Image (cartoon, rainbow, N blue to C red; front, side, top):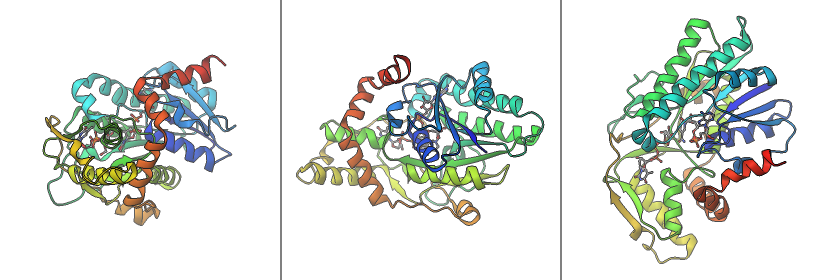
Length: 350
Ligand code: NAD
Ligand code: DAU
């Protein structure tokens, strides 16, 4: 496969996937299709944007004519689909945009792939990136495996579950070669500061309250974003058609313990007296329908495709904090909305 369409490549995970693919596969053409919503930021890709095997196409995955035209223009052989509305809290306040992008947008992409690839889809691949949240919430014991029943409980996870079902339906009904992966919480550079870790880092830095939902007892399984990108590369190239792979860090943290650890690191990095950052912790109203615990069993990916994560959590968290502290301009641009001007400067005014 030579011409790969990556949707949502200007977002958090997508930008790490685009960078990895552009640098690792100079013979591939990597086409990044992104609408540049509030979460899409081309500054994330400054280091690779001039490479000859990289192309950016601005547009909406829900726009069927546009999506088909991108398949035709770039003769797309494979799709890695990450574009989505991704923040659970936003799905609670505005579910419709999640239905539109995550469900309708995925079907528009599937239809374009089917139309462009025709009956014989040998050698083609549609890779759908999904989340562990489709499996619902765990109690204190157990892990999500690929055969865990779906039980989505937020508008976000229900929209992702729906798109997973549709991708499988296109595999079953139309024999489209698909793979799906469901990953746990990612952390690392370039994450929009509405998600827990970048929000907390930014607030601690600025001596602002750090909001902890409920009692802080919810548990998430954290994976460094570059390890997710490497898993995506592996599954895209080596995964078996029709299969699903779970990706996770075997790295569970109660929110409050994670925030306490973060505060300790920030005290050290900012030369504060121990406990100064932790004094910012503020318990706030819980998220509606807040899932208690996610934990992934990634044995299938490890045993069948030989994946393992490279970055240990202590190292990854330290790198992440350092990145946000050293990239205050990125953070300021995101918070002010100025990052949107970057697209105009780079792609319109030139
Ligand atoms: P993100 O919100 O940072 O990025 C989403 C990207 O999609 C943005 O660049 C945005 O501009 C683009 N986009 C949104 N709507 C679009 C549309 N209609 N047309 C074209 N582009 C559009 O998200 P993320 O955290 O990088 O997540 C990427 C994918 O990975 C999502 O599918 C998400 O469900 C999944 N996922 C995320 C995590 C996580 O921890 N962040 C974990 C598992 C799975
Ligand atoms: O599990 C994978 C999912 O992880 C992805 O599919 C989602 O796209 C991604 O956003 C993430 O969802 P979460 O809801 O787990 O991530 P978030 O960073 O929003 O919250 C992490 C935990 O921290 C969760 O239990 C809610 C809590 N929280 C979050 C915020 C933003 C707080 O206590 N305070 C906060 O301010």
